[in-house]
Image (cartoon, rainbow, N blue to C red; front, side, top):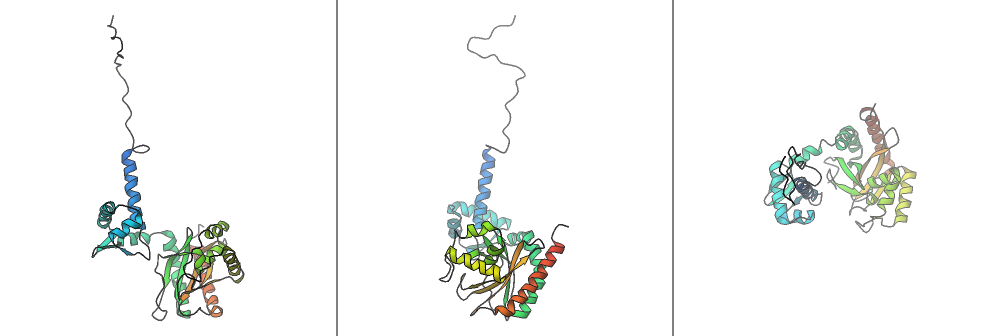
Length: 279
């Protein structure tokens, strides 16, 4: 007969299953640490915009909400990877991010399709031509055409503009989802003294856009900045982009420019419907 185990001691069991190993996932410290590093690196990249295209380390850290030491370490990794470039002690977005951006379907497809039609608008109007798409609660400039006689462009490709202060944004408010307007009126920040910041006035303006079929701005997003835009509709009547021009000094002549924009917008829509919608 086997000896009994001493009182108070649990007998050792043979063949006992070992404790399961911790998997990478929920509750795994390494996973949470990696996620934290990733979010911080993205915050650092997100500190860049059209008004902060070149930044010092302290500026990046402040805008990303990171300690300078952390920003310095992450910036070094991003420079090595090609996501950032460092020149004379300042940082800018690297070529690798630019190449990745060109692969984004929204920019690649629409910009490629729209380019020849935008060239036509530039040739006829001699104005800077812009193509915007909706990006969250802003409009994103995905393509721009400018000639030597068209003047200096106001924005660069990749710039974002508020819906209530841009002609392209007003197009999206007029023809986009209904809840877009409800969201926009919560953020009517003034960009110039002429920016519409009253919800009632903005609602009336959007009704005028629907009635006329085009939108305008007069120094609402910036001084000496006059915009004019028309919608680009897909065959299912969904607005997919806003095509427009921008001028300095005075507004463009609506009577001669809007028909040119509408012809180009219909051409873009036709090509998008044929080449880029599921068959």
